[in-house]
Image (cartoon, rainbow, N blue to C red):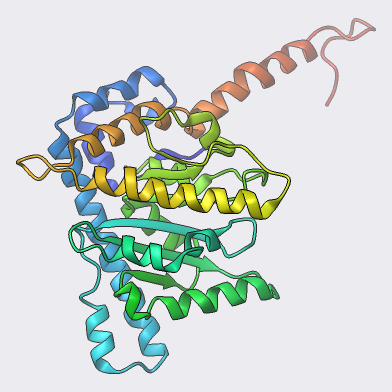
Length: 319
């Protein structure tokens, strides 16, 4: 479970304090309480998300500027970094360890196709990656080197950034500002998906393989799916399928929905999906719900059984 008050942005907490029950932070594990998100005005939720996203992108600009200074980059490149990343552009984030199992490499299976998605003139996309390499992992080191080169590739037109680490501070910024949280982890690999859960608590929509928590929580109207959750005996076949499904989801679902705006420049279908995500996921991934279920379904029954008289009739057994 995820602790709501720890990972949810302050602005979003303030919004919910105005529209949900007054004690909502003490009731985050209740399905009924979260249904009130559908009564909020879409513009108010969208504006709150926009403020979070702006703060996140300002953090990204600062991080990028620091990286360039460490690399002794020209002043012009550093100045450009301070103005990079448009808050009006769909922003997809990924964070974690650069390992084979996390499969970030599938996003770059067809670099030309990805470049066309990122630099579309009318519906561009920004990709922000925070990656950490395990000590001694040559494969992860090579992927990090590849990503480092791609972020300055003219074909990507400055639409991609690699943040060279992934700690709790960076994670907090990413999950609070992402429009979309990407997860391509191997379906057969046991992963809890905590970052995707934290993004969902902040209004980010998940674009994920149907594994772990997302296989249980995805309902079609609360985010996006990669693949069908099926595995294949040949790993290369499974990866090719997932890569194709990822590109198709971006081209046919994610990008069009984000840029489908009404006369007030609101992406109504997108905001509806954000509301669906809150109402179907927030209670499910709440650490409060998890602890209550453990207490009622596991701890209390065990304690009750242990509280009976001992065989000698001398009361409760000692610890």
